[in-house]
Length: 458
Image (tube, one colour):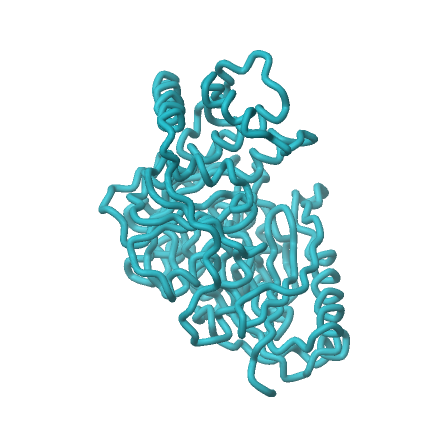
């Protein structure tokens, strides 16, 4: 094949699935295909509709390739998800939706054997948010099906297997609050050996490894060159981080926004992570531990603003700031820095929908600032993904951290990073607009009022 320039990035998010075409020469996104990604709520448990996703992926690859020759394929997906496949690469059980509460029913048994936070950097999370708890529940609940498994795969590598026939695993997904990985030793955790899963774990390969060319039948189906390489792939938040690891000078932080808002600090202050506040250790595509924190900010935004306009005015913003109209955490409980707080509004009587939108945007920024503080973030903060286009969020984040914030111009923050797996270049994409903290003291007063109100919640 000729030099690799145009990368098709398969990006499976929790809410939406996308296939984006990235131009490595300009580090920009071109064409983009998107579909809603909703779980199938049928027996044996809520699970991902992998066949619908597979049809979407192949149709998108064929469509994009007709517009511009695809030179390579990279993959990124949400975390807390894995697949159990047999020797033929077929699923032995459906890919479980991590918002299913089934694993909680074996919580006591699982807690008795899971490794401590100090070993894995994994906090104990509810539902299926610890992938180890998912696999444990599946093994106990469906022993006959589980016994047929020949390999445990992280979610990006499940799609890589379907594309290439090669089974692999990779550290960014293994290190994403799974209980399965020890980031300090760069090896599987004690849980894997305790449950005799090590032989089931597909070999660990670097994210930028070429697993192989696309399978011949898929080349025929999509019109791609049969030699089109497929890269191993990585976890989506770490895909957002990768361009900055390659080009930025620490200290800095990256906030990856989607269904989850994931904050990652590089070269920040030394802090002790608090597992009770949903901090964790991610593992970067370079294999290094990265202090991180997250909350379900994208989900909260969707629920809170459904059907509401975002055509706010400066007068709306001034009213919210002056009245100190506050939304306190959390509308999505069970994760984030205030796991057990119940959301409440203060000084919200009589506000209109656009003012409400502003207050919601400020709430999400203040939650993000809390996450950044918990992980010792320092230096500028780059916001990737949808929230980068929310000027209210970006402005309040700058105010509440007292540091500059860069709003990334990339429409899909994960795609550029995933595409960079195909190159050795160390220059990140254009940063976007840099915003300094507002100088008007009314912004700082709003931040202080919110923090005092949260502290009063207890």
